[in-house]
Length: 353
Image (cartoon, rainbow, N blue to C red):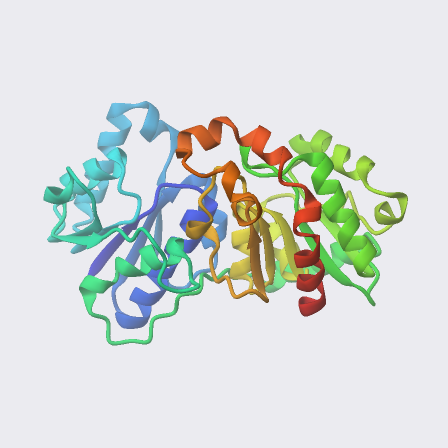
């Protein structure tokens, strides 16, 4: 059996959707399981033994109708028996339409059910603490009636070489070995998903005041200006615990560094999802316009905790559409003072350090 899973989206989505591949491999060890993703997300799939081939959806496929058609024809030539469309947008609809696959599985949504042989209900509310992001992906396995114990946890795989390089990096920067290490998810994927920098500095101060820890910042070199704003706003006693220049060269090195951290705190995004896939405790600060029910995955109130403005000041968000919340996100962020959840961070640190 040849199976193609489609998830043309960002790192968190690709990582969570990889649980589809992991469980299919468990159920069908001899199947060919391929995965179509954006090129930028490939690092989170490296070393995954449950994926045979990673197919790349590149910028040229998006920018050129001819290149897109070539990709669709390449997929058709592979003669897949089953397509699982976890993306379910125009680009994937066309690929599904031209695929020639006997069985095509996706979410049941108006106007597209004719494309698929199996239309799975698109859940609106989570039933467990797994969160909607995971529950929805697992629902795409239901048409198979798998006779296995389903594993709901995304996974990352670190090589021995990557592990040793991370250890060497820690030693080079002289991290204190008698202290635990906290990673700060410093910036979101965009400004509207980034906790105000002056507030983030207070969060970092809270961590440093509460525990004798090493503190690392997760940021790209092009974001050094914003990272420096947070660092400069921290108290001198906090700055002494921050290893500002300890950065990986790429996504794989970040994964290896995160694997040697003890937990992560900060903005929702790829860094949080990668930390969870490495089985690290997480504390997420959600943007006011993001739905917590989707990405508050594995929430148990101990190892995985998240906070949202709606948890504290629901009147500010009630009766507003997602579009309205997004438009007002920066103003609403100002209402989300760190003091609101300081006690939750302290409890999280106590439980996990």
